[in-house]
Image 1 (cartoon, rainbow, N blue to C red):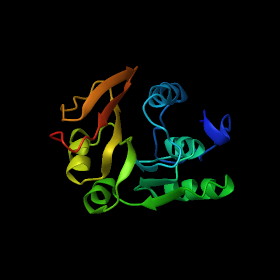
Image 2 (tube, rainbow, N blue to C red):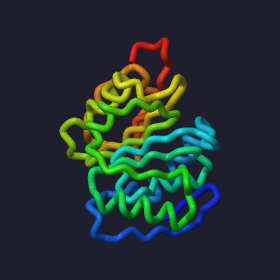
Image 3 (cartoon, helix red, strand yellow):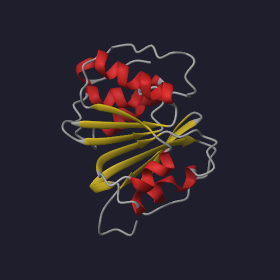
Length: 183
């Protein structure tokens, strides 16, 4: 796992192998950020990384200059690793929070410019996550939501869906929140 862009580009991260995660592969992450670099200026934005796992995407975004990156995961050891690594790398923008992601979405009062969600592919509520985020008002106008999911998993088409890109077994569905749209 490596950071591919920004102030920490090239840095390899070595999370404990005991973490209960399926990290986004470097190939898929590089492809994702090649798309995002033409859509989002990460400098100074507020970001939410749901089901953050190892913090792979959290650290990538923080390295690219985000003002605030909130990383949420239900596993204590994942959050412990994210917070310890953020301190070690002096990435003050990163804050790890241990929480059930669905409960966090329902109770969060903050809004974000960019939300990345990489839930377990077998999570029963995965297809409903975009609707929950839009209904909860978690995105700022013009904000982006990226949902990573198994390519074989059917995700309902919600207003705001811009496209879905497939990278082998993994796919990324891109949503943009427009307040005058019918999310």
